[in-house]
Length: 193
Image (cartoon, rainbow, N blue to C red; front, side, top):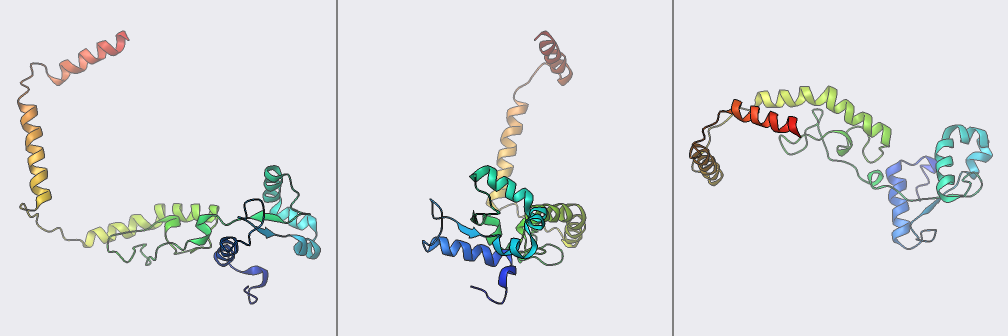
């Protein structure tokens, strides 16, 4: 399908091609939701030991789940959703095209695009969270000049009304106990039970 890439096409291209084949009704397996991943050529070139060294864990899990030896029978695979999605565009500060909307980790395309793998996506999330966003977000917030609040805005009117009602309810209780009295009684009840 993509001869220029040979067997080295990026995961997003391979994943979309696999999904397209299955959507067209040409998938394999009982559900028709699979394509073959065949190690035969690689085993012929490199030997089974080299393939086992590189993909042994994957092959072992596959055999445990399906009961088929992927070294001798092609594996049936189907792309996970995150291999086919590209993530949101972000700039060097991880800010999207919507000012103030920052996109971290696997949700952005900055490092991996649709070619993400579990471990690298996890590391991207950690790197973004620990090292990038604390500086870029604080820089962004430092540039924001707070504006005045329009007290006639419906949300502002509703919030003031709700706060006023809650305050009146609390004031109208006219309780006789202090907070300390309440905590002492609560402590006794907790101790008894």
